[in-house]
Length: 146
Image 1 (tube, rainbow, N blue to C red):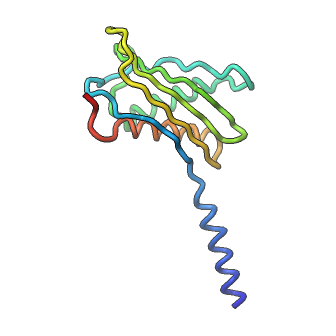
Image 2: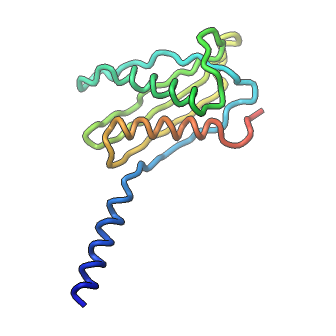
Image 3: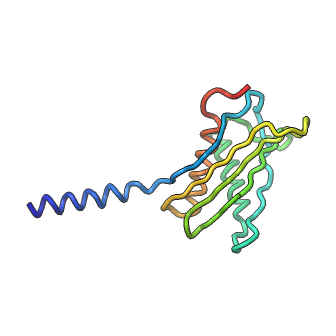
């Protein structure tokens, strides 16, 4: 009986360790049908807390994910500019919140808005990568909007 209880406790410990994912809160619609290419704009670093380089890291992850699996082509000459902002960033809580817009600079018009946040028990860099991957995935899900 004691062996059975020990195995049960071990299984609970192992299974609870497997849930090391990221929890998301997101509002990410599919891209408009006419967005086939994007220029990923520079992302401003966080001003407080000494997190220099965070904006560059997030931008590089976006570019990588869009090239790897995204629904668009990265093109520095595109009139569609993807502007991402780091709304909140807390490495100790392993939390990041991002907002994004696509601006058509030829028409001077915002054509897409999204936001996503994630918290997890991985490193902050892994949480950030997972949040960006989830946003890119959601951008390409379903049919593109009219």
